[in-house]
Image: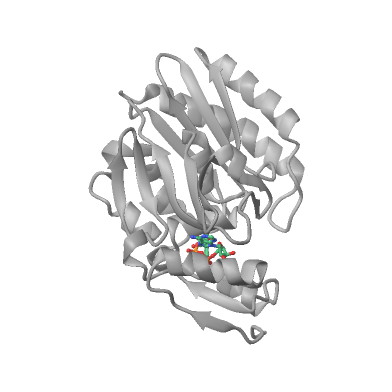
Length: 275
Ligand SMILES: Cc1cc2nc3c(=O)[nH]c(=O)nc-3n(C[C@H](O)[C@H](O)[C@H](O)COP(=O)(O)OP(=O)(O)OC[C@H]3O[C@@H](n4cnc5c(N)ncnc54)[C@H](O)[C@@H]3O)c2cc1C
């Protein structure tokens, strides 16, 4: 199928993008890398009157350390973050995760913030943001607000973004340790995850676990895990709590089963990492 007709705007600044959003509201769509939006346009799942192309806004094309966070502007592609020389030191979880996000061709166009805006429950980048306890920066003509990842993603492809708001950046907290691990199960490398598990050890045996693909948004839990049996028990409980869902890729039951098997392995891997 082909998209319905739409107007195309390429603003020269974030302020201009925000002004067009204020004018059109939910009749406008922000176009970042287009890796999800173009398919939605072609399938007529999205039928905006106007596309606001922010991909070449240089003011949003930055990765910078700001205090104890790494701030990633909305025009930064997944490849640019993956190739950031400080990634492994500052954001080891993202270094582990980004190779699993699609393929190098999609990463060359797809943006970090576009993935967060799209809010697919299987997506690795929103999962990482939620696991690390990161934030999303939203700007409109009404002002700027910063939402915790847990407040931002509300459900399957649903966020707290208002129609007149532009996501200008995502902020990923810098961990004091490199004790992280990530694994996903997908039909092929580069496909969306059926389930994904991330773990960060925040000191001793205090672990934060993030789970993607099992609920309608990333599920994050903190726990003290000091034995393999404790890890197994935690994921047994989580599998019951999160229930899972059926789609063309997997049944809810398979998702729960994968979580029980993969979860403890990821936690043990993170606990084994040297700080
Ligand atoms: C073959 C293929 C395989 C893929 N595999 C994976 C995978 O394994 N894992 C994964 O996570 N993703 C995968 N993707 C999706 C890819 O990562 C996309 O890049 C991502 O979902 C969206 O980023 P984008 O920059 O392309 O956003 P777009 O497609 O341009 O936009 C997506 C949505 O977010 C909105 N949006 C984007 N930026 C902003 C902003 N700054 N402010 C407000 N709204 C905004 C758009 O309006 C739209 O609704 C795959 C895509 C393809 C084509």
